[in-house]
Amino acid sequence: MMRTGKIDTHHHYFPKVYVDAVGWDMLAAAMPNGKAPDWSVQAALDMMDVNGIGAAILSVSAGPRIPNAPTLLRKCNVYGTELRSQHPGCFGLFASLPLPEVDAALEEVRYCTEQLEADGFIVFPSYEGRYLGDESFTPLWEELNRRKSVVFIHPSQPPYAIPRVAPASVLEFPFETTRAATSLIICGVLSRFKDIRFILSHAGGTLPFLAPRIALSISMMPGLIERYGDPMAALRSFYFDTALSAGDSTLSALVKVTDPSHILFGSDFPFAPASAIRHFGEVLEHTALPGFDRAGVYRDNAAKLLERAA
Image (cartoon, rainbow, N blue to C red; front, side, top):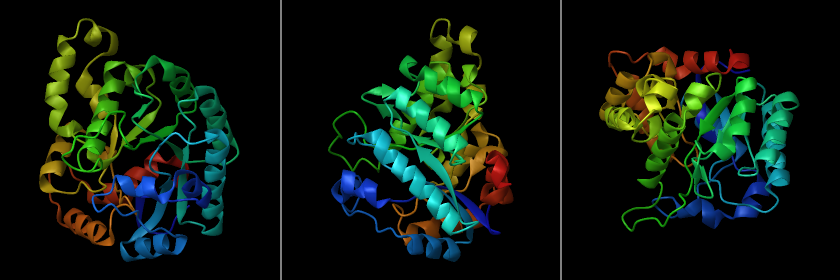
């Protein structure tokens, strides 16, 4: 599937049909500088070459309600596979799902798995105020569990007014990832559907830091431990990418709550500027923490996770 080099599991693309539907203003709204990122296929390939990335798993970021989502996202998914075919070895695909329409999402899972051979699926922390542990999503988890799918959880605009402190991407996005992960643990999704491999963006948001607090709180909730087991074991089952998160404090916490084989390289291109991708790449290159396997993070862990990519 890929050239020699890193496997970037957190790499976005912008099909024209999607941009026409949501508008660049929406994509710019969460950015700290208020500017939408630039994207093109050539820019993606150039960034990959500069940063030693052999293959990037494409995903559409930001998840507002869009008109006729099943049709539009089908077009996005087909375009992603076209890019994969046009540039052999360079791209994979986390396909988009038209949630919260569960029936339509189930049809897209079938199509993208059987016809497009997608590497997995991207979902967002919540839909219409319902986080991923909500019982309404159970049919989707049942199907993805049956197919032993990879699910990439990426933050999007939260279902509440953004506090006037910082743009959503600065604080709310990591908090939303943390809420989604906690929802999956508390509602027993991880313990009931163990064949789904969930990837959390940005090193899990604040999850590594809050792990002891979350585990203690769950142990105090009547019946949860008896039904769903050890919350720390559930937390360790997540995969975590390094996008915008390569720093001593973050990585030190991360290696203490998960297995070394569950840490994946991510760039967050093109939302992360070139300077940020270069900076975080240099941090990863010089990280020397017990439990941090650089070769695994760069390539081996993702190659094993995305089975057909090995």
